[in-house]
Image (cartoon, rainbow, N blue to C red; front, side):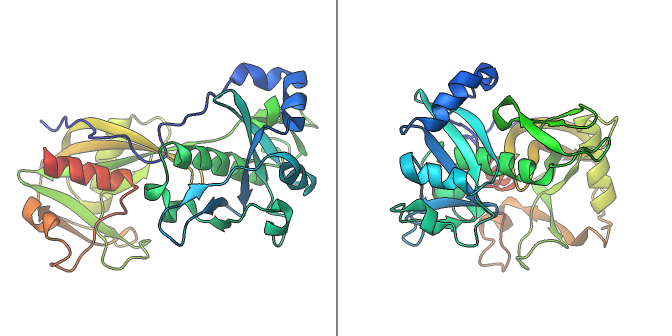
Length: 307
């Protein structure tokens, strides 16, 4: 049986924000919060987040207040109410229209950085807040037109929904569910090297998107069979991880490998192998690498090694 509990929270979880969804409909509250100099704004510039301390290996999120926040809003990009952080309103604001957003931020003294590069180093909760803002702003910038009639959409619910000005259809942020699984057979686990991996030495767990009319367990079995030709029996849930890069949630599982012979799908994988625990613990000496430390793939592997 592979029911192994998560050893600790995944990156991008544990948000300190109360989403305060009831406040989204309170126009007076939102208007006052936007003008309050104590309100916090999370800037997003071309899918990057504002941080300081990155070069020193101690990144921290920079949240904007007061005059700098007003400058960001004047840049004309979308914004949305995220919720309350210790009773202070928090908004995401996209400043991607600016070629160089830093002059808008006065004394922020930070840089816009890819969140995925530093998420494992951020203080608790900050990665979740930045991921929330990044994912919501991506959706806002990519869904300006109605998928039903093609009409122009306008924001509603303090930026957390869109309504078509032509047909009235409502649109809400989309999150695509994906299963990610460590398949285990005896004392070995199945890892693959994807065609999409930029790291040429990395082996990771298999993963894939849920299809219509499919259960999570069925998706696990189908994806493993399609990509590696392995039959999976029992499936056990481990944990989940928001992955707003741009708009997914990873649902982590362990799977029981019933067969051993691998047949890879070359359009998906360059290679797939069974690895022993000893090989995984000595992966650097053996010339291969494991997934990034902020990923649920790495958590699945590490928790199996520790079990």
